[in-house]
Length: 163
Image (cartoon, rainbow, N blue to C red; front, side, top):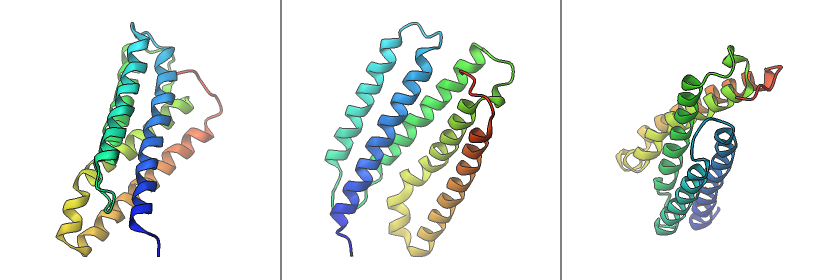
């Protein structure tokens, strides 16, 4: 059986890398947009990653504490909302649903916004009991399935329009 401390570290690394990769991805997406202070975006991403590191290092390493996952989900959801807002405020293309980027962002938005509540309430569900805990992960698995379907639509798009 794996050591709980080792597993918790893997989850924390996953949370950090998810936020790092999403920050780089959305940073590139926002760089081509009409946002006045592009360096502010990268500075915000840097502060966000430092905050996540602080959360990770202050978490109890013997049990899974979902604060870092909740924080990552919140930030990635905010990135996606900012992307949608920018597309509505500055429409560059007529058929946004023909863009791979739209579907990728939509998949990330669906997963992270849907799982935000799960991550926030994880500890509560564990304390309530095992039956409720199984329901929680069934909902999580359904959200992953829908995200995969949305991402597969993005992969099937013939054009990679710059959005």
